[in-house]
Length: 480
Image (tube, one colour):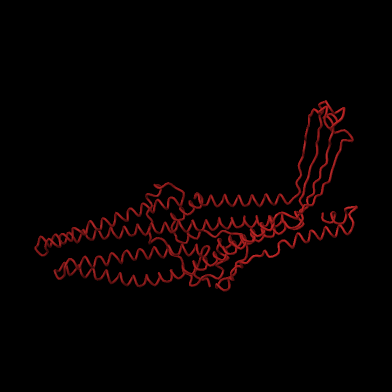
């Protein structure tokens, strides 16, 4: 189309063509000088991971929670992924972004429309038109096809479409990231509920234990071997245990409500849910952050797609400094009255090429370009922050899991010692060789270790769920 403007337009002297071309070049280049991006993506090699390639989002969930071997957990996660409003919001955003890309894709193509028009009009006797039109009503009819096409010689439309496609792919990655986050949240809430249920079992055991000891104290008081002091101590220990159990019962109810919200159900729908913490299988533990971490994580992919999209928006803003070339055509029939509309001689057609280039726009295009470059810098900075957070998050989870494993080993030893000390204190008390206060002190140590054991079991599972999220999907112990 530019050829028809600069070389085929009859009557335009060669020097005028050269001058017009010079104006186009100067307007397109000089006014955007000095507007460049300042941000650069981080080097992934320096962080000990592979640089991510820009790729379409793929499912990062892959039912990783099924490795935990709990059918009820499987059901809850699937329900959450199907019914959670947060997932529905992410899906709607994806559809909106895809629709925007589809709209721009369509605008790249020639537009054709059919037009039918009937104009009934009385012309003024003293107006522009002479007789026989003046003072009489007349009918004019038109039937034609009209077409238009904005020739994208400088890539503005293509860049806008690429940016929209990038945003759609970023939205798809956001959806996958939301699915992974939600599945990990459900698993973590389920594990925490299992921890509270296990803590309640510990307190039930404690309560039964204290009731047995209180019976023993009463027998010793009746036999004159203990005083009212030991009796009051034994009686006071029961309300304390019941208080702790009621506090845990409250936490259980609240956690059930939180889990119900995650799966998109009513607060009373999970009243009977009591997970068995011992039945949930822990996954294998990687020793290092996987080198393909950044390619696994959907949030990193989303940030990378937004960097690419913002770069395309900058290209589109730069293309505004060059001519906008449009081609409009029409062809059809036009006649006075409807009865002659399709008669021979009523045909009409036209071709209307147009070139538009704002030479003086008060700095609009330059300001627009500066804004797009700033958005691109912000996208790069956000990507860098996402990368740093992803690497730290994954490293934290690996470190925590390895540390928890060491803590478990030490806690198991401490619990064995506490249980042995309690058994010995109780035997000595029964034999009249020790005091009841010693029994209570030993029992408190046992309770603390039992609850610590439950907490560590839950921490392993909870941290593994966090690790799956941090590493972008299912993990195994063989990553390097």
